[in-house]
Image (cartoon, rainbow, N blue to C red; front, top):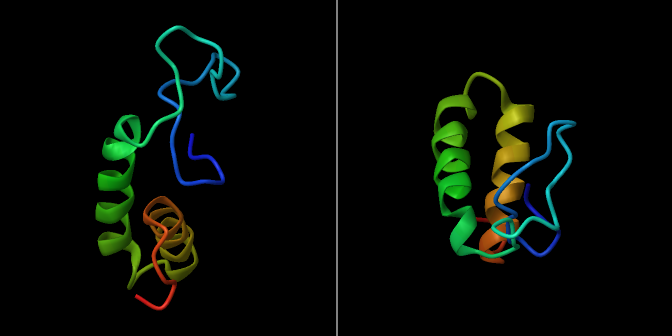
Length: 71
C-alpha cells in the first residue's frame, strides 16, 4: 500500500490491489503510520533471522521518511 514517494493508501480491494478511488482511501502519510510501525517492528524481528525480508522492510521505512539508506 506504500507508494514510491513513501506515502500510503488506506485500503485494498478484494483482488488485493490498492483502492485508489474510494472515498476514504486516499494517499497520505498519516494513513501510513500503522504501516511504518509494523515495518519497524518487523525489521527488529527479522533483521537476524531473514535478512532479505528485513532489507525490504527497511527500504519501506527509508522511503517513508526520505532518510539516508546508511542509517
